[in-house]
Image (cartoon, rainbow, N blue to C red; front, side):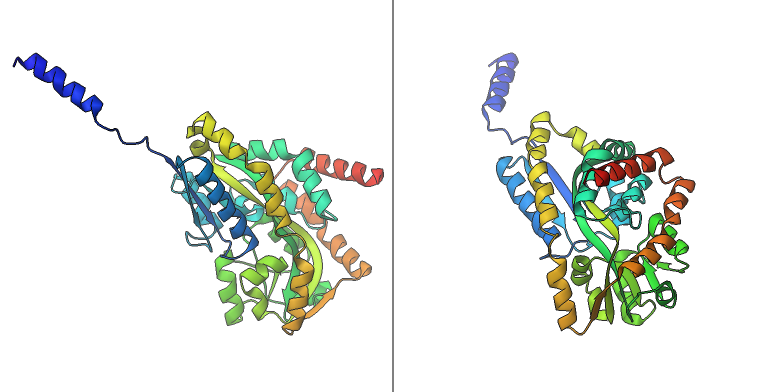
Length: 334
């Protein structure tokens, strides 16, 4: 048989053999959220739906409880494409995108509705653009919750807080707030805060009831003040280069889950505080709330931190003015 004929027959045989399926995409999500928490449940539900509806083209791995490091470390892994996304507090993402700290200014919002209004309708385009400039794609806004004060005694005055050994999340906005309140707070990565509380290195903190329960901080807390001094959002984000590498059909498929994921991520956390605070009291924690006068005193003392954040370049004055104006108009309309 001539060599040319042998070559043609061999080629035909190769084309007739079954071909391996095209390589799929793997979404690798990191988060500090422990297992069996509202945040982990929402992400695992997202995983189940995406894997089923993509027909196996997409697999999702979720690394919970800071298994891949703190938020700063996970965001660094995203930069080098070792993670494709994750669920983070805005405080964590702000180490890369400082503009997000505008959402965590102390005493900025009065309730959940105001926070949603500003995030969804007022400055989302500006914050999305800021994230994309740093290689992140905002998928949905979620919730960490309202931050309260936990400590060795009820924190009802500035002097009470100043006498404590306060630990803070590693973020400029919290540093600015504590500086305005006359408090020298110790910044620690979130996974290290529990150890600090256990050893007595620190004894007071700002935390949401949900996360403080999940992280076991409440077990080292004598008193809790329902202060709601900072609203802290969370966000599910993708590595933008990974997102851009997906076929348009897969982007459309995943985007189709965004609205429900955002709704679930908010509703899963909100409404839990009252129940958790009852549990705190049952565990011997002295639970109280500020009076209007106590709140006013803290608000007055903390308010200069807003301008401090503009001064240090976290976000422009024009963006802050836009938020102030939108809130003022909304409140006047009520």
